Length: 91
Image (tube, rainbow, N blue to C red; front, side, top):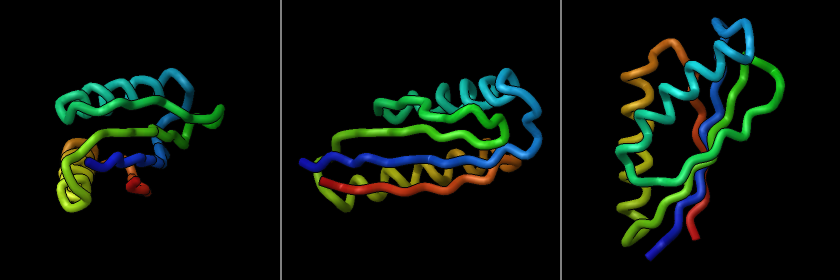
């Protein structure tokens, strides 16, 4: 069993307020629920940038990376206007 700890950093050029950013983040977090993972909004005060920390347990490193690619694919197809950058570490 491995634990994947990841970060999803986003650029939201269209968000003009924290309320607008929160609306996008809530939609993203709702979509991520289907992956059975823990998630936390770790964004700062700047409304045009956002970050979500995710963590999940997987049977192996290969399966963890596959799950991460599925998450990335879902986010890119569901939210094409948002720029995503993902980083992760497996332990």
